[in-house]
Length: 478
Ligand code: BGP
Image (cartoon, rainbow, N blue to C red; front, side, top):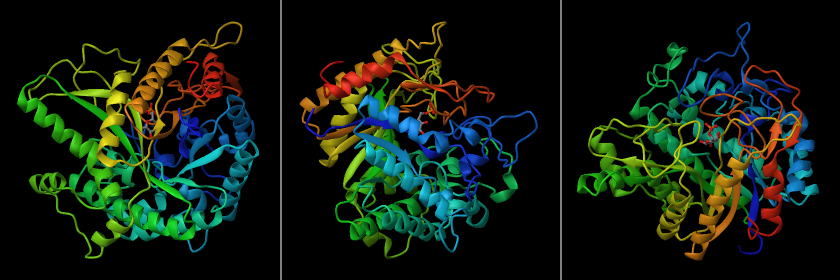
């Protein structure tokens, strides 16, 4: 591993902070969901129903535990900590006349604390938490007005933290909007406007709206990149893609072709635009074939060209099979489901574990773009058991991470320019897809269950010391 490799861990504000309505923070889309954000059990409500506990509202209360948590990250030797900022902590409604000082101050404190231990903050500007005010006023990213709100938010935080933060990601997993059912979590939009306050993800879908919202996010991202560089030329600003590694189910040319097309739209469409600065031909054809017409302004082309990113980052959890034929044997899964690959094991949540797919993905991405790459999410969601002696023996997590890091090292030998690796959910947090606490990723256990019981006490798991060694030896001792 090269010197200065960014080892660390990753979180998102809405999954760790809690304090969802404290110190002037406004509600965000994430706060309005009572179940998982993507697929399941969703009903938008800001009010706690009697007897119901919404894990995301309190999360692990990073808001008041951040000093303790950062100390533990430092103990593991983190070089970087990927975190996100809650937009509605800074602009409670998304478009307020002035920012909320208490919100800005909170992130100042977090960055200062990280600095104390020489941990580099790696900041996601928007991680599935559009201010709900923008949903109410504009129906979220479907409206072009939200671009300016986002750029103002960026301007505020870029200026405020220009000497504290160097690495930025404009949108978390921007490409989820190419998938059905993501309109609210990805774009803060409702297919039927505010009428559909009760909805399931299937009902709340409209491809036209999803791709229009996505276009607005491309423009917003490009404007943010340009603006960021003008505020501090040393800023490194990246895109972030949920990479779903696709294999053809058989060698049938139809499977090959469909795999390529699926990969183009789901994985490459967004980064092609964010890295290269223009809509790719296959993307235009896809939109046309699906009757999707994007409203663009004449200046958008230039904006996209001028705002290309400095590096490429992605999350990696699993691989999928693509078939042109109808299939019966499916696995569960976050957004995708799909056909079962007989060569791979699955997690308790049905995600197909495929470390070699990570090497394949890293090569795919670097071959295409030839810019630095960063793995900003990877990890195993599992139910952990606290033993009688209080220890947590998460050998399964160590195995998962070790296998992925081995393949990551292979990819570096293949020539990939890799900046770093931040494993997902370095401290237990609320799951995005299920909205639960019991799906844990952390090196650090947090005493909290799905119903809100627990002391919030933090406890290093077995994997804590293992990861510490990995970082200490720069990936040699796995
Ligand atoms: C990614 C998100 C994260 C995260 C992770 C694990 O899609 O960027 O926010 O939570 O997936 O997913 P889950 O929480 O559903 O296990």
